[in-house]
Amino acid sequence: MRPPISTASKFSIQDLVQAIARNNGYDSVSVNLSPAQWDVLAAYMQPFTLAAGQVLIDQGSPDRTLYFVEAGALSVHMEDEDGNMKLALINPGSVVGEGAFFSRLPRSASVVATGPCKLWSLTPIRFTEMANRQPAVALEVAMGLGAVIAKRLANKPKRVAVT
Figure 1 (cartoon, one colour):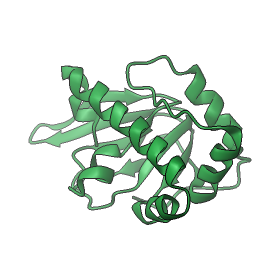
Figure 2: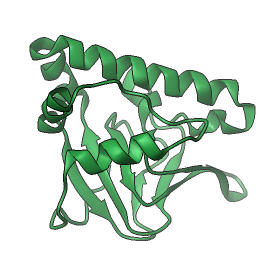
Figure 3: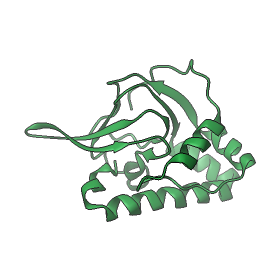
Figure 4: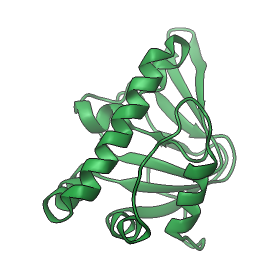
């Protein structure tokens, strides 16, 4: 992951919760947590913003960070011998980076902000800490992420969005 552009914006985990609740897309993330559990999850994540055109994920990178999208949109591209090809659009209330998060494989595509974005990052180390201290929260997050992967894999044109 490239360094975030700014954390100067005001962030509230409730804004992410609302974005997730409003997302009716095929790859919306469904995490059934109480308000107190959302606060627990927020303590393990880092909020930040991206500017339009800023690269979040580089194809081939070994980074395994997971990103929850609160606001803005991200474009997923795979580089091939002909250049970039747009593959998918990730909207607020969804996630990106779940493929490498679970598989430990290099990133399968690049992800770029299409406009200003507000994101929350969760590293594998912080997830492991949460799993040890708050297993119910970690299990619910893992199940929600697994559902996103399953939905993306079932939608043939969107399979490559599993980054």
